[in-house]
Image 1 (cartoon, rainbow, N blue to C red):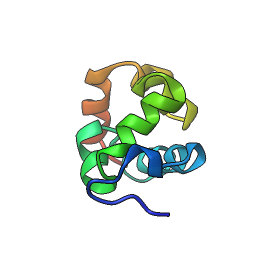
Image 2 (image 1 turned 90 degrees about the vertical axis):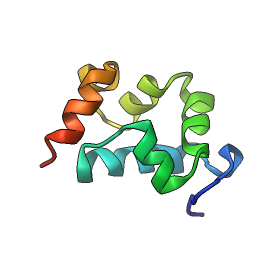
Image 3 (image 1 turned 60 degrees about the vertical axis):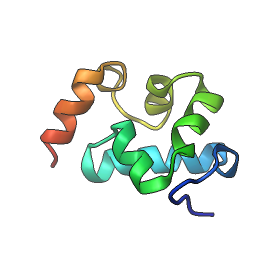
Amino acid sequence: MKGGPGQSPWKFRRKQAQAILRDAWRRTRDVRIVRLRRNHGVGIYQAARRYWGSWGRALIAAGVPGEVALSRFDWILAARHRP
């Protein structure tokens, strides 16, 4: 099941949401909410909050380093310095 524009948070399973976050980090280093919502629908943020309690904890569960996951400023820097 692939997320799309307007995707409901109930459509994302825990493993699927985690895979989306992990892939975004590995491919682009861009884990900003705005970009992921644009690519996967608004439900990705709600699913992350529902399963992990916060966006930062969801990113850590997906393998994003803690210093990046817990700092909004670092999300922006990581997005600007893509591999």
